[in-house]
Figure 1 (cartoon, protein in one colour):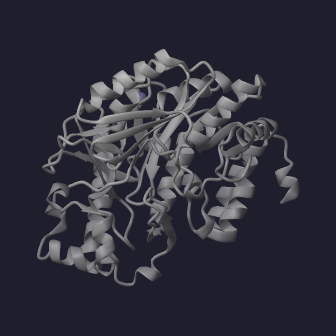
Figure 2 (tube, rainbow, N blue to C red; figure 1 turned 60 degrees about the vertical axis):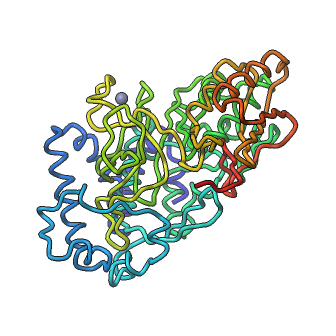
Length: 454
Ligand SMILES: [Zn+2]
């Protein structure tokens, strides 16, 4: 094992791939790399062929659900699943599944090869669920496929930036650690602190590790960029940086690209439900169609047209232990129209707006989501991070983390933008002295709303 790890950098990907496919995959009975290597072919299939592949998987999952899952036994009672259209199924969500987990779990789910998963969630209230090994495999394969689209090759050195809990797979235990070792993963600096000292140290470690790809939370990489720019040091650049798990703010992107001179690709995905996507060079999020069928629904539950914002609803094509069929994951997004000009086939999201909870709820009943909120800072040159705190409908506090040079005119410009968004009925305060709150998992929060509204 050790001699394998010391292999010459150029040779490493070929050897690691060969070992993975001939030894690791059969041992785990999970051909994740082979699936990743099949995906380039899958994505060049004509659309009809991909849709028909998806329909076959969907039918199999539906048939299983009809026979083995109480909830779907009722919903699909007496139906021939071949004739069932996805749109006929009820939309479900986490709260609903949680309230009667036994109705949604497959009979004998423990015997289906699965991984125990847990979501952190911004509320800090974890959701535990089994994810079929096969479903995990398709997500991981898509992840590898997307990484390889940046010039990284499986087996190249990969730097995990920080160690946020959602990027770890503790439940997979020893096998997963072995796989990480084989893959050449390096954790550049543990923990989820993003103060300047930790961030600079993390950037220097990442640079020293000579990673071909850096992978981590957007806010962590942004904090590294800030620290590097402030210290005026140069860090050896990776081939690409892939950020994940958080909404990448435009100002973060600018500073990351400035500090590290490497192309940045943002990923959007989550395991519950099962969605995986990565940006192309034009900033559109291309969906992994091997993982799931993604719908964007309006408030009445109808499918949105491309360009319209709606709820992200996901149907996993492989989950049987706990099927995720038309599962509302709690994010808002906009579906792209037709084919992306970048030339890549398949469905893509124009943009992701963020969690449904990540919005201000105004006294007039209107909600202001993260996208327009972010626009308040498009012309702000000295704002690193921002956070909106709303303790009651009529009060908004804007917390800013700013660079030296932040002056009164920038402050009043921001206040003007926020005022324009929230109207005159809301008191607005702005502070640069308070620390910005994070989730328990270390994610940056754009909106902290501390009251419930109807
Ligand atoms: Zn594209």
